[in-house]
Image (cartoon, rainbow, N blue to C red; front, side):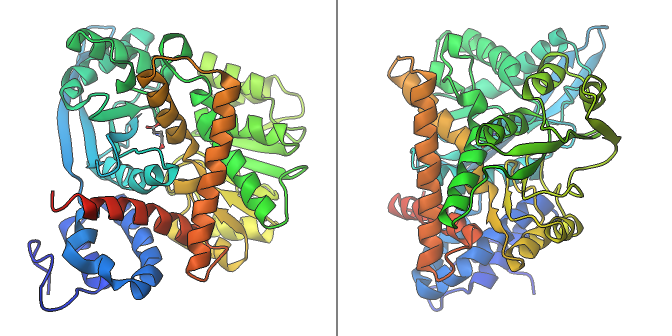
Length: 457
Ligand code: GLU
């Protein structure tokens, strides 16, 4: 029998974790990505709730799984030929228990309210793990930036902000980039916000250029952070990434800087990919050339292989069949399935760290865990981006400009702290190597304690 939405708590009996889960499924029926993310967290909460059943009181879990606010809006814009287009814009303000809503904007044709809600939910725990006083949110649009001119990107970004600005503020909601939103888009979005508000409110967006308020290292932070986290995780288990053969999926901002840092650690990254295919470069990916192809020329990976004699381009192929010691899914959600995981395990993978948000399906994660692969979940491993955003907000509030070296050092320390918090929570629950459990529980406890302390609001 379906559960009534308003029947969230009963004074007579504690609801079971499963009853709460079912209620959330009923309320969000059809939101596949969101429910996948919720289920993963609930699986981790089982051992916690078994020890501390008071987490089931006061509909606390229902409140944590329901966004505080969801905004959906029209984004009309005109292309270079004068034709009018309409896209849909979203901002899901999930939790402000720990600080202002915080999370990126994604511009991609597949974006729906479900996508944004799942990302904002993940952000809740990720941001809590940083310990920097950040609430959670996410936004975006089904706009496709591919093939658009610079002027079209600017007009779209301005139209998007013309609606979104009223929901933002440096103490209210602070967006940043995500897929399809980088430094260029953040510039146009900030310019329009500044014009509409008549305030140079630096801290309202992060991921700005360091020349006008951005944090030096924010661009690199997610990718570097993934490498720092993976190295810390391997070190804790008596291993290292030094001289490891690695594969990285994607070739966007996260992938590029993960590759750069892994190679600085002495690893060789032999493959990466984009939506058109993958390249294998046995000598190691040339990061400078990859950046030129993807960020400056904005071309596909065949252009990378064309100038590198040892490299081969594989149209329509991914990277998970390439033998490696360590794999870094840095593209998008559900990009690595059960079969891919089995192939990686059969080829000897020892470490998997998620640079993207929820790139491994639940089945794939179970394959890695059963095979004893060191697995770093995205909530912890890719938190370096938002952690650097938290530092950017501090830098803006202090009206200072900090050095790359100082910021990079802080980022590295933050990633070690996140690993420590996750590993400690996992150990406390008797599964010391299960960082999925540890990251979910450590993030949950922080946000749940704050949510409870603030009362029923
Ligand atoms: N979009 C990034 C993430 O998934 C960064 C968010 C931010 O810096 O606010 O964590």
